[in-house]
Image 1 (cartoon, helix red, strand yellow):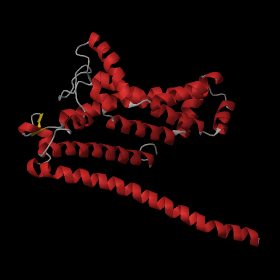
Image 2 (cartoon, one colour):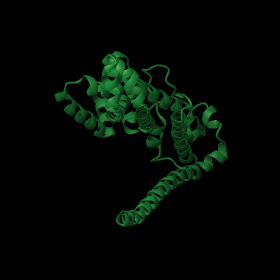
Image 3 (spheres, one colour):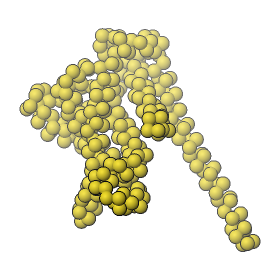
Image 4 (cartoon, rainbow, N blue to C red):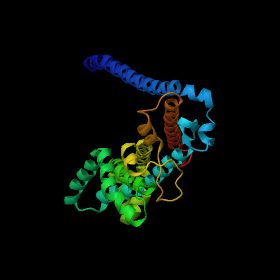
Length: 292
């Protein structure tokens, strides 16, 4: 008894050290986010004081040299590219994980997982280069000019697909096998088990994967810059060229100064706001406001 008590007491300093280490790490992470937001606000303040935030939504176009700062076309381009890629990649990623766990032959599952992990590690510029030399000419042969919203959606889908596929694979692997065995004992078909038992049990992990892929789709820059045409306009069809907020920052920050430079930081604030809204929506959903 005494020996057990001494062992417990001896572990307390280690546990307390780990607790304070975790608290410190969490504090540092939160401080970094606050510093980033503060930096964006400070850099964007000059132009916000001069022109106000409303003109970033109501000006006729984006021509900072002429005092025009409309971000709406690029905001719509970002949202369209993100929504299209997420809507395509999410079901593909989920079905990929289901196939790997419940339908694929055992000899095939390991190479298949390695292939998905390899896709996740390919640099974004490689995806963009492939899109520029292969995908854009292919789309251009169907409907000119080629660089377009459709090209951006396809490239983003390829880039975020490994994220949701890997997260879904891990989530399905963590479903207790007793759930599957019990459902099978009741005579449910394989797909009925996946739909009615596995998906609800893995809901939290699957939802996390959707949030991660959406965040990457919002923040992607290089590949989108290479395939979308970089025309500042609201796309009215899949074949229209467009520009995203991230591509706008990457293209113009090198030579921007004064209010132009500050306006690009406003673009960064808008992107940060989109991520905050995404995290807030995820928190709202995860606390059962929708799923109960």
